[in-house]
Length: 110
Image (tube, rainbow, N blue to C red):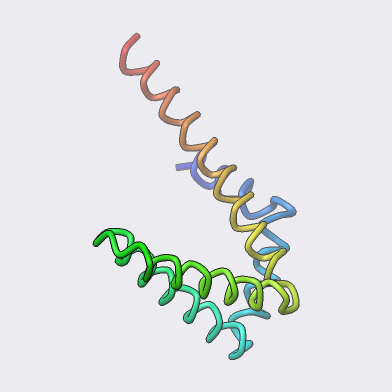
């Protein structure tokens, strides 16, 4: 259990995680940003469905609308930084998970 607590503390003490948490509070309390994220998510669903059902014309329209909403969203304060931090943190978590898997494989197979 001690190693899990150390891992949790390591992740929580990353500068990216600290900044992410600061921005998350701002974004969670900003209705305009929350609505724009919801709009983007809905447009993404429509785009995926159109591609799934091979509706190429409609998919192109949805893709253009998606890109417009994304641009509007990224022009709002702190949103682009927030999204970049999410990507960075997820990459770090993936690396940690891979390292854990490799260590477990080694323990099991040795």
